[in-house]
Each structure stands twice: as structure tokens, then as C-alpha cells.
Image (cartoon, rainbow, N blue to C red):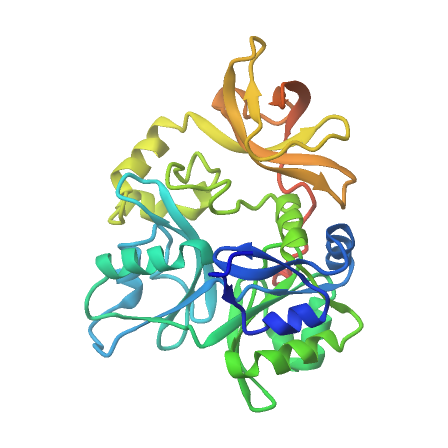
Length: 374
């Protein structure tokens, strides 16, 4: 770890639970407690508690009643925000002028403001970029005084219902404000593991008490960065800085859903000219899921080659999938090779490894969605 690493408010709490701390996004963070494999399986079967307080929590508000914050945010993001309901979340991206992805994020309309969570490694760059392009009548508040915990897994709903019964009213991509023994919490239900899960924003003064309360449940164990990465890989979810970069555009990243029809038709967001051109022409490469033959995992940076060993693509995430007991990966391939079932060759350390393009997610998700109308 670097001496310059920032400390989470739960830093000592993690160490007391035998968390092995590593540098990540400028913070000292727990990579594992009992071991990545055990923590991964525990989260898939029970409930895992993740400290994701390194991420940036932002609030957008305005004292000017004539300002529609949703309209202004649509100038920055390609999402359909003005039609977003109160206490509803939406996945979106912050785009460069050239259409590249500067970050991916979650944005929520609340009753009187908007709440956004951005990636920890680029949060300060995000805030500077947003302020530069945001209407001056809107205030951007960085919630440095709040931590963020995530409870993920098929038993997360049960645990949260015991802790705060009214959270049982939440479904996937919904959020709300809650009171827990006099402590104010902002809770959303989404997740980055493919499982049902909650994100809990809590003041730093109260995060220790909340974390202690959660791990009192026998269904809950603390989980580190290692399992967080293997879980999101099985869920087919991209990680910024790896699967997504400022050189990547949304359609190539297989994120067409995040630029909905109305936004493609009306445009009016940063990078729109380049984004819409890629949509019309079709991307040259596409992020795909990859099933790797054999037992040897392939890692980020391994190349995808043609029959003449010429590079035609790259692996951006890869590893052993504990749930499936085999190696999987994500990467970018030419469109001609992006169909499910297509054979590809991965080259790692001079060795060729056979693989196939496969559907994502690798493991079916367990999100709690509203019941379908009869």
C-alpha cells in the first residue's frame, strides 16, 4: 500500500476482521478476509457486505424553481432522465466530446434533487468535468461526510427486512429514504454482483454502528474486492478502467440500452454526434462474453488473434468463475466474430488458448423485480 492511500471510515473495522488491505482507487481497501473463493460462494448463497465508500456520492440541487435539473443532466448524460420517476435509478455514462466513456454511473431522481454515484478512481475528474459543463444554477455537492455500504446476495432482502421492514417494498432499481433507530439512510436496490442487493448511504458518524448491526446476522459476512470482481465478471458487468475507458464508445461496449430511442432521436448530449454516427454505422468491435476452454484462466491484456497470430481483439476482464468452476472472460472482438458460439483464439504468454463467444450474464441474475401484471 502507498503511504498516500486514503483511509475508509471503517479501515480499523476491516483490519479487526482480518481484512487484507490493498491499494485501490487511492484508498486502502480490503481485498479479502477468508479468501476470494469462499467469499464469492458465500455471496452467491447468502449475503455479503461490501464497503464501497471510495465511490463518489454526488447531489444535484437548485434554489431556482425554474430550473429542471433532469433537463440539465440530459445535456451531460445520454440517459432518459426527464421521464425518470421519483426514487427510481438509472444506469448511465459520462461521455467525452468525442463520444468515449469517461465513467459509468447510477443516477436517481429524488423528491427535491438528484443523487449520483460515480466510480472512485475518477470521481474528482468527473466532478470537475461535470461542473465545467453544468448549468451554474445547479449546485453539485460531494458527500464526503457519507460512507456507502452494499449488501448483496439472495438473502440480502431477508436481512434488510429484519433491519428495516419497509425496505421490503423496494424492487430492482428503486430507492428511498429510511430511518433506522434515529439514523437517516438512503437505500437503493440494484447491485453489482448480479444478485439481489442494496446500497446504503450513511453518515460517516453512523457507518460503524450500521456495519456492526449487519454482520450480527448469521447470513452476512464481510466481502472484499477480490470477490466483488469475480462476482461482477460472472454477472457480465463491465468495470470502468478495464472494460470501459475514454477510448470506448457505448455501442462498442455493448451498452446500447443506455442510449435509449428518444435520446438517439433528439440528441442534445455531450458526444452525441459521434455516438449517433456509431449507432448508424455500427461499431467495428463489440464487448462479448467468452467461455475459455480448459482450466487456465485468461487475464486482462491477453490478446485475441486470427489464424495467422495477428491481433484482432483483446481481453479486458478474465478469471476463474467460482460458481461455474471454469474460466470466463470479457473482451472486444471484431463484429464479424461477435455472434454467440463463434470460435476464437486467445494468446497469453505465447500460448494459444481455444475459446468461444458466449452469452452474458454467465450466471443468471437474481434481481428482485416487480411481479408482472396478470
